[in-house]
Amino acid sequence: MSTNAERQKKYREGRAFAGSDGNGERRLNTWISTAASQALTRIAQHYGVPKREILEGLILGFDDRLIEFVGGDDHELDKYLHPTQDGNNPPRIRTAKEPKERPATKRFQQDYRLHQLRRQVQLRQEHPERAEG
Image 1 (cartoon, rainbow, N blue to C red):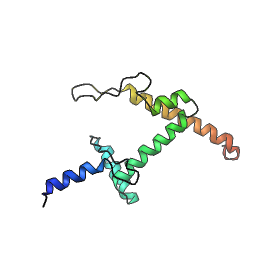
Image 2: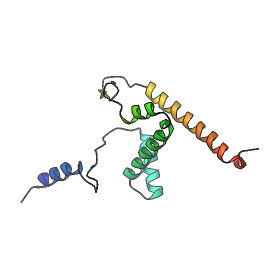
Image 3: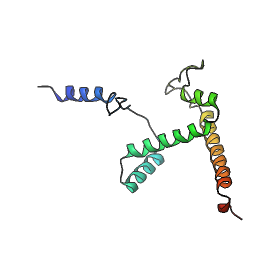
Image 4: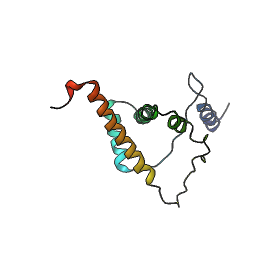
């Protein structure tokens, strides 16, 4: 008979290969602001779904939009989907003592705003009857 610790270890090791496609799951362990945590809790409770489902939906939804956004440029799409294959260094894990890098966040916000504006223009062109007079 195995101990609880042994069963738990076996379960955790199997998570990397879980699912029908064998692609598994990955553990995410991070700190977020109290405001973000409370918002996540409210959203999950409002829709009656686990926080995990909310996070996965947000991440995968944004990824889909970003792929659609850069999809017209094969080089940019390839760079996004395979960031280490064009000679760039792989992402580096920041230690707690290093300052947070904010330019990436600012660029992310600018890119997303640009995407939203382009989408609004596209929708106005596709549906001129909906454009405000």
